[in-house]
Length: 287
Image 1 (cartoon, rainbow, N blue to C red):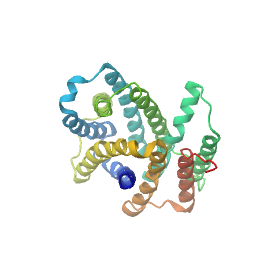
Image 2: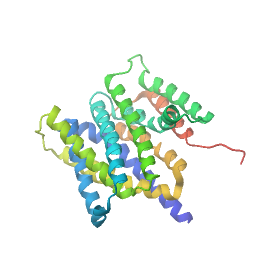
Image 3: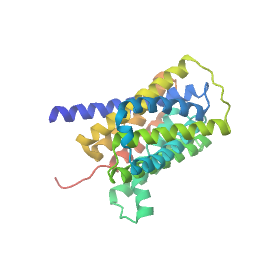
Image 4: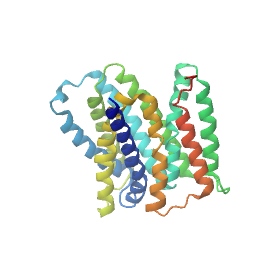
């Protein structure tokens, strides 16, 4: 059991590393493909893999899984649209740190729409996140840019996705089938976005192909499967704490591979955001 727990923890670290490096890759790839086009190709790849994985179980997809996939897929579509458009105007590390706030937004949205009491540690986490974001986004008086605002929309959408997914999983929806249906709808919505708002042409480059393979195969299909499996062993609290490593890896990869200079205040602000995200999922007791 201990070895299995260690393996689950390592799988979550690998997941956050994969997601962390994708911020740099996606930002570069968006020079060769428009945001909706990139999302359509990325999730299209994941859908094909998911279709193969579910295989014969497709015929048994229930109405709950179909409806849940629709709502979850829409939240994912909106989230990645905000993230991709935001990455065109902001840096990968800032995008990752702002996206991580979705972990804190989940309980806040639950309170707003379900009137649930918020634990004191959540308010502490929110305060830490606000302070950290202020330092991160305005260390030299430059202010918040359009990309930062769009990325915050991504955090809200991802938080809504977590809530919607939990809702339909609690109704008995299959994890693999719900995953497949929502990926299908993200692909569909992205294709519609391409035809309505973008030019269909793309520049097929090496960096685009690598980004699509990494995000489609590893970051979307494999990483999410890792996370689902790890949660059955670690539970939601420890999983969320490990997921807070994502912006840290994003900042490291941005520094080493993209030459981004985050600066002292940027690192301090980013660490405070991570601390806020982690503290929102840690329960403190006398033991």
